[in-house]
Structures are given as structure tokens and as C-alpha cells.
Image 1 (tube, one colour):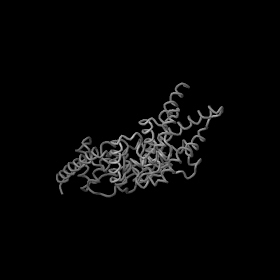
Image 2: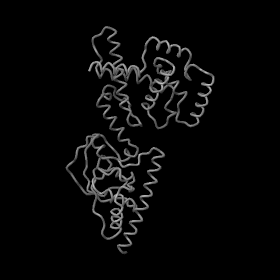
Image 3: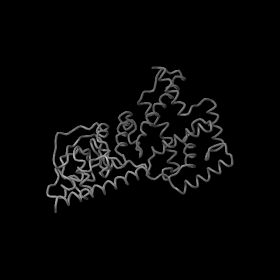
Image 4: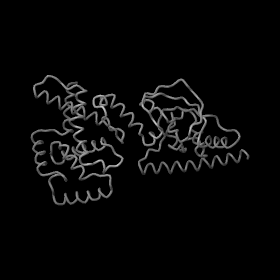
Amino acid sequence: MSNEFHAAVGREHYAQSLRKAQITDLLGLITGTNTNLVNFDEVAQRLKARQEISRRIENVPLDKIVGSVGRYLDFTREFLPRSSINSFRWAKLDAALNSLEGVPPVELYKLGDAYFVRDGNHRISVARANQIDEIEAYVTELQTSIPLSFTDFERDLWIIKVEYAEFMAETHLDLLRPGADISMTVPGRYEILLNHIEVHRYLRNMDLKREGSNTNLSRADAVASWYDTVYMPVIEAMRKNQLLDHFPGRTEVDLYLWIIKHREALSTRYGLAPLDPETAVATFAETHSDNPLERTIQGLRLGLHKTLGEERPLGMSEEAFIEARARHDAGERTLREAEEESSASMEQEE
């Protein structure tokens, strides 16, 4: 076949791939899905990856290549080309791939079971457009203490793994409470747990001060105290009510954070002190579920509850409501109020 034929096919392949990329990005905007390649520099920095000296050539499955060193915005996660790339170069590589000329190996970094493009983004894009399964590559493997598979990068699970490792390194909860399960399904939440621990430490130190003690809770003691007296009571109430059954695919920590947020919202709205774990879980269960039918029923019940002019949260007894209001009037602070007080205290110390 002539060079002109291969060039024409290459241009057509590019046009088809560009249209697919545009549709992919449009669907990503609608669904809120990140369609970009993974940014290698961000991953390597967060993982504190160390380069191995060994460099070898091997055939790499294209579907295990998840990111790029510098061009992660020029292609979609399936390496479909966006309009920012050089269409002439792309089509020329497509023609070369389908002729006797061929293309040279690409250069990749390997982290765990996933690969990132150091050089050769266009060649990988062209290879995928031609439905090729593997590509010849020079591979440099990077060491990391966190095991990763290429599927960890499909929904940014790698971020959660890194944040989990950082949380454990800062709190040593895995040593203080062996077997503690602090796994999540959403990134960016471990910082909230750290803040909860610091607020708990502040409140406990204030209690000790009022009791006439000159000692302060150490960081390790604060972590253990938070886990035993704040976190686990909520988890035990959740288990008692089998709450996790209504949220398939979620973890206990996911629900813990939602319940704490729910509890704070009720405290602010109704002027209540923080609800005890049983009441917090009970009121949450009345208004939250991942089951569509349950959500519909809950919405109808909540609407009726408001229509009847009920002065307390759905699922909360009058006795518990009066008791929480009395504790609030006596000066008991919510988590948000304690956080604001703690921040103000730290600013004064500085």
C-alpha cells in the first residue's frame, strides 16, 4: 500500500479519535468524572517514590498505562487525543505504525503495577486507536512503600491509599489500636479525622485544667482517647442498628464522618449540645440511605414531619431533645464551636 493511503488512514484515525475524546470529555462534565490522565509528578511526590537503577525493555499492556509525566492534559484516560496535540504528528505516527516503517519503543515509569509515560504519548495514543494490546517500552521501575495496582488509578483510589498511610504515620493508630479499620472510599477525608483528634485533645486538656491538673494529653494519648471515647461509640451504635446495610460499598469511617456532620447540623439548627452516639445514629438513619426506595419514603416522612410543625429532629425522642437542649444551654459546645475556640486559643499562643 502507498504512503498516501497510510497517510489518509492516519488522518481519518485521528479525526475519529478526536471525536471520541470530545464525547468522553462531555460525558465527564455531565457525570463529574475526571477524564484526564493521572499526573505522574503528583503521584511520585505523594508516594515519595525512589528510582531504581535498572532499566529494561519489555512489552507492556496498554491498559496498564494510566498517566503521563508532562502531558496528562493532552489525552483522555484512554489516550484519546485532544485538540491541543499536533494532529499532523499523530497521523504521521499512525501511518508509520501501519507501514513497514514501524515506531520505536516508548519510555515508561512503573509504580506498583501501573505505568506512566515518560516519552511516547502520541505512540501510545496511536497504538490504542489501532486496537493494539501491548507496546514495546523501556521501563524504569520506581520503588514505593505503598503497594499499588493499575486499578487504583481508575477512581483515584491511590490517593486514599496515600492518605491512609500518611494518617497512620502521623497518628500511629495501627500501633495504638491494632486491627483498627480506618478505611474510606472518598479521598480528602483523613484530614478531617486529624482535626477531630486535635479538637478532642483540646477539649480533654481543658477538662484536665478545670480539674486542677497541670498535665496535658500527649498526642498518642489523644489519639487513643478519641478512638475509644468518640469514634468507637458511634461505630458500635451503627453496628447495633446495622446501618451499613443501607449503604452498600461504603465503610464505617465514611458513615462516621457523615453522622458527625449530620449531628453538627442538628445542633446548629435546633440549639442542641452534641447528640449521644445512639441518638445521632438514630436520627441519621431516619433521613439518610443509599437505597432509592428508602430515600423516597424518608423524604415523604420528613415532609410530613415538617408539615406537622415538629420542634425536634425526626427519630429523636422528646426526652432526649430536652436533655440535649439543657446541655447546650448549660454551655456544652458542639464540635464546630470547640474547633473555633481551639483555633482562637492557638492564635493567641502564637
